[in-house]
Amino acid sequence: MSKELKDGLYGKIVTNRGDIVVALDFKRTPMTVANFVGLIEGELNLKEPGKPYYDGLKFHRVIEDFMIQGGCPVGNGTGGPGYTFPDEFSDELTHRGPGILSMANAGPGTNGSQFFITHVATPWLDGKHTVFGHVVEGQEVVNKVAEGDNIERIELIRLGDEAKNFLVTKASFSKDVEAVQRKEIEKLQKERAAVEGEIKNRWPQAIATPSGLRYVVHQEGSGDEMPKSGTPVTVHYTGTLLDGHIFDSSVRRGEPATFAIGQVIEGWNEALVTMKRGEKRTLIIPPELGYGPGGYPGVIPPNSYLIFEVELLDF
Image (cartoon, rainbow, N blue to C red; front, side, top):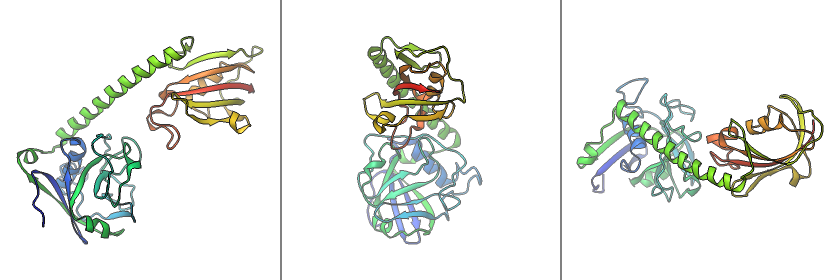
């Protein structure tokens, strides 16, 4: 290496194009770094215990002026180590420029062995991919890497007592994962309590069902008949997030929607079978009856409450 490194934990990625040295942020993202270290050393290699996991793998995905991605055991982006682990975001670690080391994933909580290194700043990935290090030497190598190039091996460099004491076993990694999961649960519980308080203040007259669905009837329907599960219904609706952002509206399109009960989110399925023809309601749908922790990419954020103004026109 041409540069003297400070105390810390580093990975030297040896490729057919040259070496890339990355600093691993084991203090702010200990679980994610533990996964990387455990795979490098073979401790977390479930298929071949003790065998360095990354040796001989390829950079299977390279996008010019974006990033290089590697760590897939089958070489096409579909493989992993046989387990997944949660995201571990830090507000201080962002995709702020070239040389950011971050986890590739297929959505929230699907981290495994695949990682990428950026060519440029990619701020749209913040909060979606865990940043756990950065290049300290060899960015010119990152920029040369082409699809199909080899990761010959990854060597760990431990400088200073803290780095030398950062040891990974299956048991220690499991504890790291459990700690992150507990922290995430506590965070979600606090956020949920705040949202529940807001909902009670905004819709004090709302009726709550055992599932957590709430609704307010604005206009009673006619007759005694109500649709059953599987019945085609025609509705007008407007869907918003709690902040008022409209994400979908048949009213705006000027054309009602028709579908069978059971083909939509659970909050709708539950509400519609208790509505009469011509009835208008506000539905307040919790995440577990909506799109849950995955959200609807590009439209509805994870763990979102959904507010629908619904009119049951016919069935």
